[in-house]
Length: 191
Image (cartoon, rainbow, N blue to C red; front, side, top):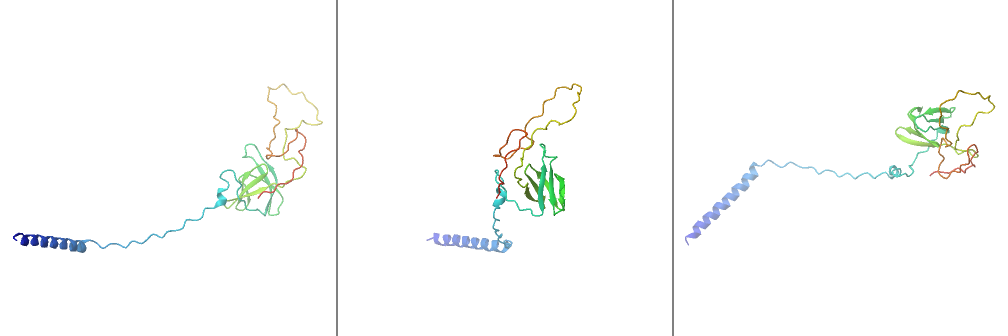
């Protein structure tokens, strides 16, 4: 029974040490700062219209009502192409790429059958109206007619101009021999 007083003293010392450690930690630790929960914002829905053009699909194009495409002079290089546009009911004017058609509206791209205008960062497409009975292709230049023939000095051999069209017709367009008009097409509607 000698051991009972010794074990009770050791137990009391351990309890006193644990109690002092607990209250010492409670008194000397800084107070915990309040942490505000971060509000979770719902992700915006992905705009499907912007993704349509990724793999060759048609992009949604807003209708342009105050501009009408009358003609196009498209060059092979693309930088010297010109669009002939009627803007706001005024007479038709030729606008090269990059020129301002109206305040805030510039010619962004000129293709064989359409023009892309850039208005405030939004691209708008204007299609060339389909003309019945008229070919949309061009051929090699024709020889001069009824002009006197002069014998020019011999020149170094130059390759003959190619008979390829200057403007490639859209797929499915019937094309006849050079110098002959292609059959009239029915206008297609794009959606």
